[in-house]
Length: 280
Image (cartoon, rainbow, N blue to C red; front, side, top):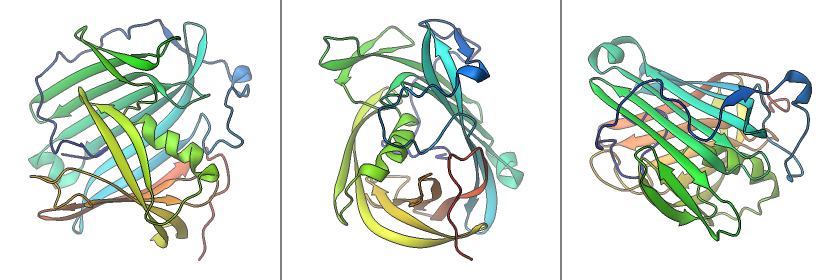
């Protein structure tokens, strides 16, 4: 069930790996002291988010509420290096939870100066299905590509600017202010997700005023290309609306499925970098 992020390959059916509280490879992670959190290592002129941000979403299928999702960002340190820890968690609610229980968590530890991941974790609980994956990204110079080491020791060579499924959202948010968007143009971003490499293409389709519980929000509209199959109707079955204000918040996600549409709408937030721009 695609609650947290779409799968480029239709479904999550992959070989199982042990689930549990496994130590994170590559050093101990600690929370950054409060008085050190203002040192900006980013080369971007303006960051769209900051540690302490929380975004809460409600997922509905047809008219039924079926799940909740949270995006959080905190500061952390690994091997003396400051990182952002992005976490996306989602769980089913109500009748859907009784019929098909889901509790998924995705982590991404990124370099604040590039928004590229150094470590990505996928921890999936769906009914009796369990999957736990850890990907470590090595971009140590003079490498002209990244080496991803998986939890089973397998290594994969990918393009240097490859993202995980969590980091790509924050990478785009941080760069929208400097992008020269043209309707019909594509963003091409390499993605490594669920033990597979995927050259993701995202088409910009213009601006749209989206009605939310906070008011009307002017948004950029994007269509990430997905693979047709059992889950999605066609390659344009996924639409993402991102606010045009300086926060560049994902406001709404729409999944067009064979059996109807599923929506993921922003219903709460705190710790925004800038005031959210809405019209009544």
